[in-house]
Structures are given as structure tokens and as C-alpha cells.
Length: 204
Image (cartoon, rainbow, N blue to C red; front, top):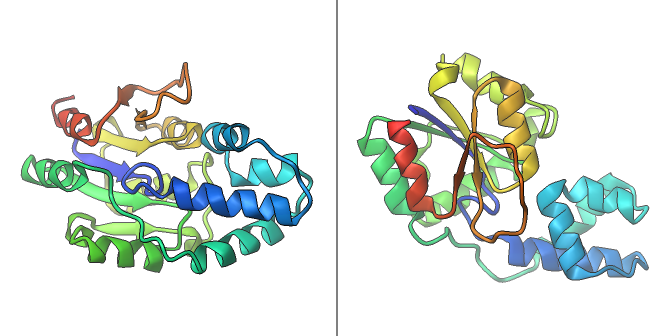
């Protein structure tokens, strides 16, 4: 692989403790009784939109409430152990790296800059660009076309089924980042359990 398209939340950064707590608060505030582990698995298998639909909450309202709660959470997300070394190894090996995320690009960039990681990425595609949400491949295809990526040498890396599906539907390779063993039988070309394993895709 030469072109690495990364998901952000749950793949590069350990943000789910903050995200999950915010979602549970939104559900409680809307009178929905939900099991935390069931909600977490739903997030991994599907998305926050699926959670909102399951509990009968308008998704736009759900997302706005979630982001408002996250905004006042004073915990600072951090990258997973080994992420910086992995990004450096990929760069040293001639790889090119990008981010495609549902998190706003400015917020993503600020977190990367805080940890000295922004330099590793050529572009960040966030929801402000108005592409269809994953698993639709529209945002990936934009990156593939703009940066003239070779599909056979390109991979989408993420921790959720929709990341894998987006890569598969875009006609590039997919890598499921499985650091928790929450999901099984994910139809990815590659499965990696640590960030360090992802750097081995340079030889694939």
C-alpha cells in the first residue's frame, strides 16, 4: 500500500469514552432507556444515526445535543499508543496519508496539532465538505481522484463496519482496526489489532 486513508475517532484517537457518554446522556435526556454496551456495539456496527433512529430521535437534533455535551466535556482525547510511531513508519516507507472523518476538520486538525501529528496528513475531509456519510464512498472517491491514488495501492482504515464498507464500495482496499474484539466477521481485506500492525500494509 502507498495511500492510507484513516478514520479518526476510534482509529487514530481514543475518543469513544467521551462520545459514548455524551450519547448516553442524549438518550437519557430524551427519555430513552438504553443499555450502554448495546449502544456501543450499535455505534461500531452502524453509526450514531442508527442509534438515533432506533430510539426514535430526530438525527439532526440528536447530533446537535451530542456535540453540545461533548463541547463541555473537559477530557482531552489522545491518540492510541503507537499511533505516532506508525504514522512516522508509513511516512518513512514512502506512504501518503489522509483522513476521512465525520468529525469537523478544524476540530480534527486542532487535536492532531496538539499532539504533533498534523504534519503526517496531506488532507482532512470532514462533514463540512457535504459529502454523503460513510458507508457511501463519495468522500473516498474524492480523495482518490484529487490525489490521483492508485486503487490497488490504496486502503481505507477504520474501526467500524461503515469504514470498511466505504473502502470496499470505493474500489480500494479496506483495513478493519480491531483493538477491542467487539465485532466479528467484518468483510475487510486486512484486520489489524494495533496501530503498529497497520504499518505492515506498506508491504502489501
